[in-house]
Structure formats: C-alpha cells, structure tokens
Length: 164
Image (cartoon, rainbow, N blue to C red; front, side, top):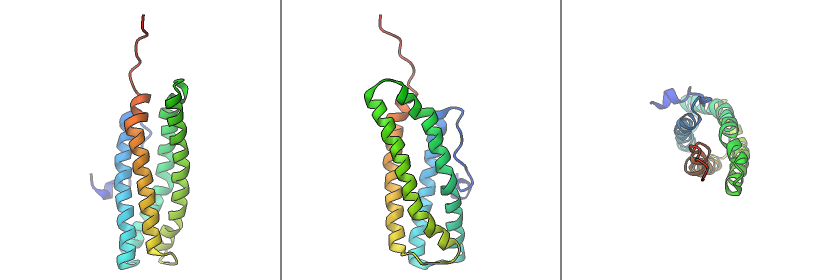
C-alpha cells in the first residue's frame, strides 16, 4: 500500500475488531512516518508548495481519524477489559483510556503548526515541531504496543471453559 493511498484511508469501524484495529495501527504508523518527514522537511527546506499541501493533508487526517479509532477501541476493547473483573485488565483499560487523552493533548500542540504551514505561515519553530512530533510518535508507539501485546489478546481471547 502506498503512502498516498494511506492518506485517504479512514480508521475503519471494524466488523472483526481485532483485525480491523491492527490494520488501523499499520495505517497510523505510516501517517506518523509522514508526519515526522514533514517536520524534517519544514526544518530543511521551509514551506514549499508540496510541504504546505502535505501539512494540510496530515492535519486533516490526524484531526479526525484517531478520534474515531480511539472510540472504536474504547467500545470494542476497553469495555471488555473493564467488564472482565480482573484488576490488572481493568487497570490496563484505564491506563489506555488515559493515554487517549494525552495523545489528544499532544495532537493539539502540533495541529496549529500544521495549519500555519498549510497556510504558508511559519511563526512556529521547526525544532519545536520536530520535538513535539517525535514525542507524539513515541507515545503512539508505546500505546499501540500495549494494545497489541496485552489489551487486544485479552479482550479477544476465546472464552475458557469453566473448571469442573
């Protein structure tokens, strides 16, 4: 799949939640790579027409897609963990829900710079944008790792037969 096709791919509301959520994590990783490249391009070459176009596309995608994905995770994954009665799983669901809030806060620090770049204004410091995007990426990677290795397997594990 090319980066260009990924830019138009919304986070799907999955019919098979585990597979669909994993697929959206792949798309998110691609979009984070593009965001990191954009921040580097702004620092290296300034606001060319291509950079401005990419800033607009990335802003549009990140402004809507992750929120829908997080809602899907909270409905299809975290709700199962909260209902299971296991203290560790409940703690995990609460931590991942809090992560969604922190990711949103970090996005709100990045978004104005992308809008400015799109509109050919560079009032922001490129080095600060690079640092913010790196933090945003690292937070996403750590969050997705927890979901993929702990939350998804626990939420979608086949039911176990009661012991007799």
